Amino acid sequence: MGFCSDREDINSLCLTAVQKLMERNSLSYDCIGRLEVGTETIIDKSKSVKTVLMQLFEESGNTDVEGIDTTNACYGGTAALFNAINWVESSSWDGRYALVVAGDIAVYATGSARPTGGAGAVAMLVGPNAPLIFERGLRGTHMQHAYDFYKPNMVSEYPVVDGKLSIQCYLSALDRCYNVYRKKICAQWQKEGIDKDFTLNDFGFIIFHSPYCKLVQKSVARLLLNDFLNEPTLSKENDIYNGLEAFRDLKLEDTYFDRDVEKAFMKASSEIFSQKTKASLLVSNQNGNMYTPSVYGCLASLLAQYSPQQLAGQRIGVFSYGSGFAATLYSIKVSQDATPGSSLDKIIASLADLKARLDSRKCISPELFAENMMLREKTHHLANYIPQCSVDDLFEGTWYLVRVDEKHRRTYARRPMLGDRPLEAGVEVHLNLAGEHIPSPAKKVPRIPAKMDTEAVAVTLSNGEH
Image 1 (tube, rainbow, N blue to C red):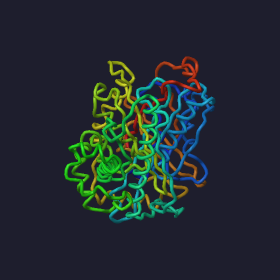
Image 2: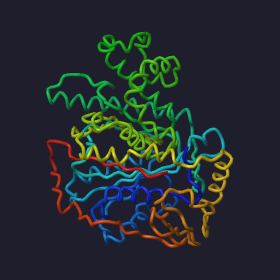
Image 3: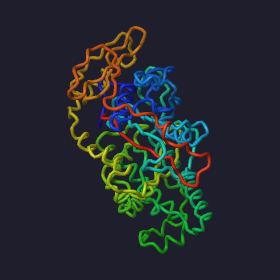
Image 4: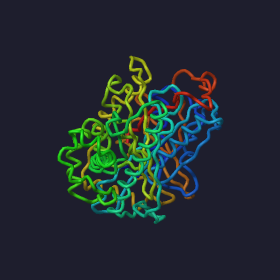
């Protein structure tokens, strides 16, 4: 799992992810018209992470940037992404890109839950003519009141968790969202003259919010159970359901903790999991639960492990869940153009080093991890504080916390990239982007019309090195 020392906080994670995305894509900050942040890691009850990120825009002079933070457990990143997409589709769009960053630091009190933590940030660029296309009208959402996971203690980072209820809420939300999604896509198909039922096989890939990887495998089995119960005629004709007839008359709400059902459908869905989902768990396996960027870490993992030709034209199902609770199942259609130099080829190339970056992290002992957690617990809320941990273990280009002054104001600096001269400790740094100034796409990209025959909104993704 990944974790942060006292040198990193939610602001520094997001600063790093955003600047890395901008640099990798050779973008100038004046081409961003909206910046949305999704996070549940709160270090200030008033000042947003987005306003901290605006220091990256100062050299460009661009302050005309809409958007703000969105919070609801692990769903905030998805809500922020939907806000960005809706802006690009709306009459408010001015032709510039939207940028979304989802980030969190997941920490738990000493005990069995602590190893399920993690930390990370994922930044995404939203605009026209991109390789990942959000399918219009195909979102199945379910929201409900529950105390499955929440953070009522304003002076502690640790959550209150009802583990059993949390699993039930997650699986029931998946059931509801999947059935809403199925109805919507079948209605679209009927308008197009396609008379068929939607099943799990109609997803080329499917990714999930990943609190822990076993729950993702159970979720694939859960969707197969939904298909089995929804379409009795089809299920009798499908060999994958052999030996499952004893479960024909089950009700979904009675099966959340039925071990026999779980075991049978996990076995039946094992090949589907291997083909459609397993590759997406690279970051989750190596970095733990990142909370709101978790599902987008899964998207990055998926893209990093397949070729453009393997991904072209595929439908990717995405299930996002945040406790409390809010959930959506939606789908992304991958561009058909897999030629060298295409936008799909470029996004996959940009993630080619993902595994290498994960492997390059420093491995530490559980004892040192526990010491870091104790230091964090004692100091995360302090004023007039200078972090104690070294910055030498941070990747090049990583933003870090320099100090917190007596008024709780935070100052950050950036570890120099290779070839840069060292930064002075305690100096707040705003670096210019190297290379040619790139004008805003508002000057060269046509406005997306209010009504479109085809989907033109897509996302380009980069992830931070945490």
